[in-house]
Amino acid sequence: MTALVDAGLLADVQKFGAADVSACFSCGNCTAICPLSDNDGTFPRRLIRYAQVGMKDALLGSKELWTCYYCGECSDTCPTQADPGGFMAAARRYAIASYDRTHLARTMYTSPVLGSVFAILLAAFFALFMYSSHGAQSTQSLALFGFIPEGLIHNTGVAVMVLVFLAGLSGVVMMARGISRREGLSVRDVVGSRAALTRSIRALWVALGIESLGQRRYRVDCETVQETQPWYRRRWFIHAATMWGFLGLLAATILDYGLAVVGIKATGTPVPIWYPVRLLGTVAGIALIYGTSMLIVDRLRRSNRSASDSTAADWTLLALLWVTGVTGFLIELALYLPQAPAWGYWVFLFHVSVAMELVLLAPFMKFAHAVYRPVALFFYALAGDKSTDTENEPG
Ligand code: SF4
Ligand code: SF4
Image (cartoon, rainbow, N blue to C red):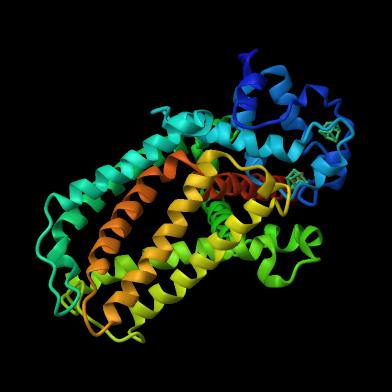
């Protein structure tokens, strides 16, 4: 198999925030200190080597790229200030941009002004589009779907989800093909036999359940790096609160529509605070606001290596998440006030516009790691499982 060399690879990754890693002489300090380094003793320096020699396909097809949680231990011990942790973060941004055929992700990451203007215009577009069909503002009770029609929100949401699904699927296919080529995995290895299927289901459980939702490596293996902090200020907890908060809000929104579809409760019907879907949305909203607020505070204070390394796209994502959470709460507050406040309608319009934008931009920002990381971890677990099985085969 021939590998094409991209002489501009290192310079290109640097556009995404990497330090100049050309001084790295593969001493191995980063490998020795990394809590996530595995047995072959080449992580993370092998990926730096790929960038140095222009092996683009190898870099993009490295499942290990996504196993790093940017604790920064390696950067603190690097004798040449090559900042390997920063390199890994930049390489992941580079990967997100490389899997995106529209080039929007590259613009968001490498042209901060253009990316920020685009984000503002997109929110304005959604707001104007929704407002163009607005109805009356009742002062008796907060009739949100009398102001912005439910059907319009639903149909726009479906269109946004379809676009996001297509963009995400195209990126995942590109990534999965790159990793399987490098790992020498075929479709048969994944689903070709009962043994392969069992391995794949195990790998899926590890990737999705244990690592992504349970955050095992982040929580346990990176723990030594975080142990001076109380539990509620640890990076894994803040990350988990943000992720679980977002997933909880998504689930509450889908369930709310689901209840309307089966005729149990029309969307927007007033319900008590303890109503299960409302309760789920409230708890998830608190988690999201806490997580994103802490992430913002940490970035402003530059509390750790990862928080010191912020791009405009990172700030845009955090702002969208935070605004979505806070405006959601304001709407909830407005719903329980005895008189319908006029501001409730405008907050609702703002909330819907920002939430639509957040979902639409997901494949083009750091949010995309929520999909790419589990896919890489699936291959990581599968490769480990396969080699264990091979070693155990009689022979
Ligand atoms: S990045 Fe730094 S610590 Fe890691 S191998 Fe290169 S020079 Fe050594
Ligand atoms: S940032 Fe942390 S997890 Fe990532 S390679 Fe460096 S030491 Fe390992």
